[in-house]
Length: 430
Ligand SMILES: Cc1cc2nc3c(=O)[nH]c(=O)nc-3n(C[C@H](O)[C@H](O)[C@H](O)COP(=O)(O)OP(=O)(O)OC[C@H]3O[C@@H](n4cnc5c(N)ncnc54)[C@H](O)[C@@H]3O)c2cc1C
Image (cartoon, rainbow, N blue to C red; front, side):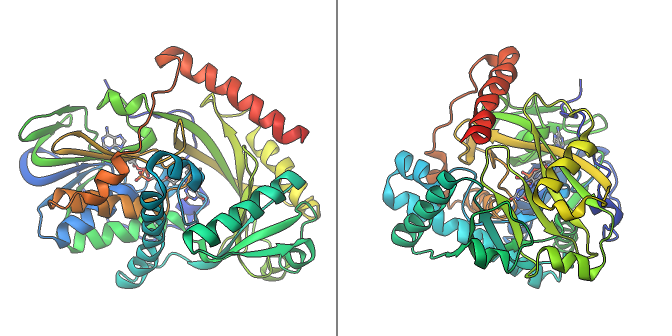
């Protein structure tokens, strides 16, 4: 039985059209012995692989499809500080001191992203600047409260722009202002992921594509079995995120795969593109089912939104995405989408990161909750440290307790769909 949650999400993306060359890696065949075996060739697995190889460990990465096939190669590309939940949830769970540590580490995740782009010379269209934008007066209050909390308790000042200031950069009347962060930004996520994979290879990591792990046997040494081979390892990293299931059931029940979708318009030309977002920043609203968008390096609008909590691909996806885009930019009424694709995000019940161990030598990171571009780099590093006997940081993350989704295997999706319908209704009404 396969362990890969495939669903109906599309992989045929603008990122694939513009992907950097990548030498396909052979499937695992036969038996091999390593220090660390990593399940998953996305940002988390590759980040851990790079750190472990730098620390002198013999590392193998097993990827069921191809490097970057999962969320890492399909995402909105918006790299933002913090985690998928409000920081105050982390403060409630861990107390002020540890919450502050986690926040500072999330900034390390942002630095790591930039450092790796430089260190490994990764061509991935990095662009500074990100704005969270409110649609409703209550969301203005929410963002201003967030700004005050970040400044006073986390020493992270952000700029507040009123409607006119925002309008100078963004040609949309939909928003009431913006909380702007020059330190966050956006990139081509597939090319960043492939860049990390190339760096891992150069550091001596062995990557096997088309090598789906179908069984994990835990023990003093662990075994990962694929259809044609087996890896015996002192330590294992489970980095399969929303796509893996059946390998570690205690992890499966603590995240919910939620489908989310993105469209790339036809090229708009430099002038029309710059007229939309003059300063090139990425933008996200703060609705529960949010819209997020940015320009691509070839002057398209990349517009994301329309989550599917039932994991079924929405009917008439391109039409729905076009309607959403035109709500923000009515001036694009003549513009069509060239590509529409999607993938699963790994939502935890609290939206807080779920990182830790399932056994003394089996490590995992999941629950990025749609906020993983920078946090995955940190997760890989923190897990690598723990494997190298420095587990203080992973231990702090592991103190965040995660409840299973209510309803068990059969009911959790319908219950989530009902809960999300309520949040969407709230966004629509006030
Ligand atoms: C459409 C979309 C938009 C997003 N937008 C943003 C955004 O703008 N900003 C942001 O911060 N985050 C965003 N995210 C979230 C972010 O992309 C993820 O948090 C991050 O990429 C997770 O990386 P990962 O390596 O943990 O998982 P993945 O990239 O999903 O990698 C997991 C890999 O494991 C492999 N795998 C699974 N099972 C097995 C198995 N049994 N054997 C071997 N391999 C296996 C899969 O094939 C996959 O390649 C978005 C996600 C999606 C889907």
